Image (cartoon, rainbow, N blue to C red; front, side, top):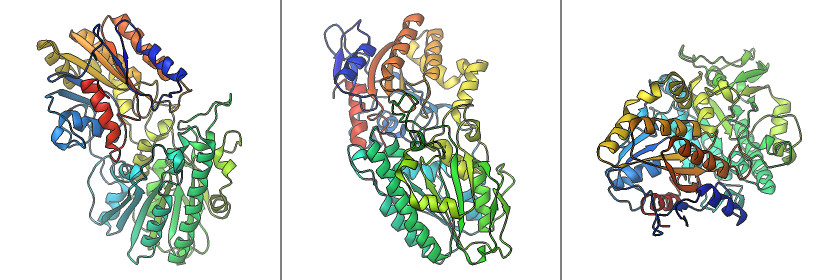
Length: 524
């Protein structure tokens, strides 16, 4: 941990860390110190905390440790915080929510299949368990009748470049085992490698991840043929198909490209052929799946089936597999296209031999602002919902634009209570102009609100990580926060650390524990 004395910008300390070989995502904690050299701006008992990220599944662990020490995955203390999250990170968390869910999404594809008596099996490794569960089911933790989840624990490595195969083989074997069962069923499975490894600056590891997924895809297709199942192959967003910026710098983020969709029907009634329209969106996958399974799509699904013509002898498939190749975007250009460079024989054969389409998976097609990249949350949400769903970030953006953000009661409550008791307000979250986890635009709005509310002390805890950004941009964002604090005459950046620590998944609590110790005690 690096302590930085008063009057010295933390953004300069971040740049010095770059010079020493550190990078944004794994940046070791940098902490503000007071004149005596002790950590300053720590989260103290009775303070107010606003966590302004707009995603949730990675934010829940640190939130729980700060609000419910008895449920923490590591030792934590009772702080009695006034804790507000910008959106709901989970219905069981003990925090007020500034923008709670407007309505629960009803009649998602899992719920519709369950009501029709079709068993639904979800298969993924733990890195994507939330995506095939919570997000795919419409942002609910409810497990529907007949729904089963088979989650393989992800490998414990420092980074997935050390094991780009991840648990793909185990996921593939689990899929094959379920395909062999005689039940009328839909299997929803996820292969996480291309997304997770595609975020790393390691060309060899990314190519190996692509080839691993392709190998599992080939094995799964063989098992599906033997089981006479129908297979739908798609992705949630792109990543490795556009791995380089035009200047040759590595682009570790998600992309704006469409994703592929292929229908390979090995069921007895498939003779005569399928015909698909060539372009659609992720919201069209659920009604397509239901049509292949012989289940009527509900009126709530605004998506439209991709099927233009069914086989003359069509009978609903007994088993339908939806296989999500996480991060596998569609792009014809060869430059920076590591999927194409990997030469995925199984996928290329699938694309050549079966009806296919491309699906919009970014921006407005998945409920986000126009021109933005796709992400796993929006992708899986739309795959399961079968309709367009505005993401929470859009709701927050609109509230800032129309001014209702500055009248938000939970936010004002946290600030009023801090002012009344002369406590500090802490704003913590991702620092990026655009990330699936959040944006500095929301942070800047909170800083303005704090000034209007008369908050006496305001500390900012910044999490950085260069997905969808050029290298070493974290320092630029931190500097912007420092400049905004100076302009407002309120606020101080108290902590900077890589998102690797506070936003780790639940299966790596030791990382989150480090972030907790830094935020609360200023110790490493």
